[in-house]
Length: 381
Ligand code: HMG
Image (cartoon, rainbow, N blue to C red; front, top):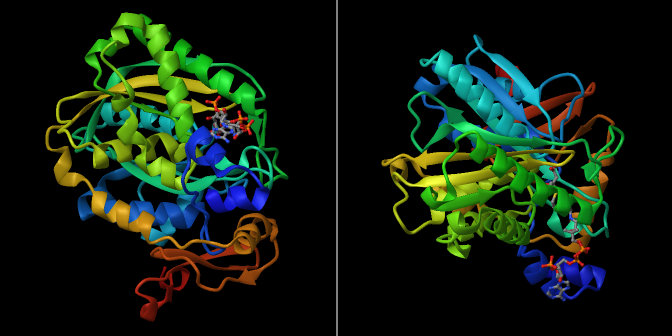
């Protein structure tokens, strides 16, 4: 972020302190929402999960096709169970939460089935715009099952939707348009309205909640969210302070906005980085997608959650990224998305899966690691 500030002649403290971001993830030209998603899903695929997945829900607002679900590319790349449904969900940063709620109901109805939720996005604004410092990229994969390993989602949730132009991206654009200050106001209003709806519906009072996780486009936003919620909740939130959400900010500060994945990057950050044992404790989560939909819900952390964390792998992945100079960043992040012609892509991605080429307007993915055994997966299929 300091390099970006220097390139734009801005005081770096505006980004690092004012916005609260230290680094920003930029995808290589041979990475996209599918490769990020496949890399996120692969470690979860035990044979049991593979066979029991009845539904794949891919949440994104950085879609690569107007017709075909990005989930089908992931299904193909990873060889998932053919006897399942695959669908893409879109509502800005909120899509994965809708997916999770639908998945919970599916699993309640069919307890032997599992639902794979994928949230994968690239957050891109105009070069030089106020939003640029909040960009990022990443994916989260989650398995929803009747016997969860990490958290148990409670049935109550509070909702608030309103038709507003705070942030949007018409089909012909690769970068979002945003009314920044309006987006912050709508986010905060959605939070307090969704939380009030949650309480009216009998949701847990905040004095029973130990940790909070907010949709986090940049870490300062979580601070603003906490202040608004604490004010709305009054004495119910008296025991909660910065420590209730600080651990959920560790990864986001280094990655940036990941749109539909942001809230769940925050949840992962909380579970991975919290020194206290969170087993049996309640978490409040707020999901927000511009346009706009807000949802407040709660969950209980399972007592054996620590056995299933992948904290070391997550940290190693974040640290393995390479610093980009301004010229490379501009080329990769702004020029590459404009390319529509067929092309072969040189290997830059460090993940297991990458986009190898676009041939006859078809995207060709391959398994790039181990590098010595590059196998085009389409050929294998
Ligand atoms: P801006 O207008 O350039 O920033 O854009 P600012 O002037 O408001 O400054 C930001 C903060 O930095 C302020 O602190 C300044 O005081 C401080 P605050 O008052 O907010 O606490 N500051 C400094 N601090 C230290 N040293 C300095 C210094 N200078 C200033 N030298 C804005 C900020 C967030 C509007 C812009 O980045 C933007 O448009 N971002 C994109 C939109 C966004 O993230 N909105 C958030 C809510 S909407 C949402 O979360 C949905 C979303 O994820 C999309 C989706 O749903 O798909 C975005």
